[in-house]
Every structure is written in structure tokens, then in C-alpha cells.
Image (tube, rainbow, N blue to C red; front, side):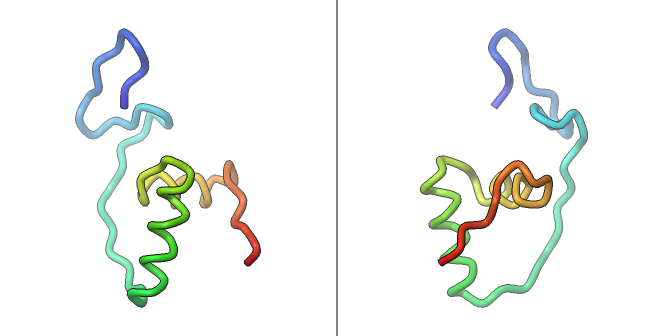
Length: 63
């Protein structure tokens, strides 16, 4: 979602100013479900949840 007063530009990230690329990963259905649940609980898309984990902005929770 773009910042207020700005229009999104396809291929350019609104938060990181770099384009996102599509990648495929292999996960069990259970792992995918758990990631979806955690992302949803934080109000994030799965893509944004993984991005924030990778950048260290978000810490994985210990269960």
C-alpha cells in the first residue's frame, strides 16, 4: 500500500524502494499454514511477514 498522497509504481516496493521478485519455495502444508497464521495475526501478508523476518525487523516467536 502506498504512502498517503503517493501512487504505487508497479515493480517498485512502497517500503523498501526495491522491486520484489517472485520466488518458489517448498514447504510442508503445516509450515505454510503456520506462517500464514503468524502473518495474519500481525496484519501482514505472507510476503511482507517473510520480508520483515529476513530484514530483522520482526523476530520469530519461540513456541
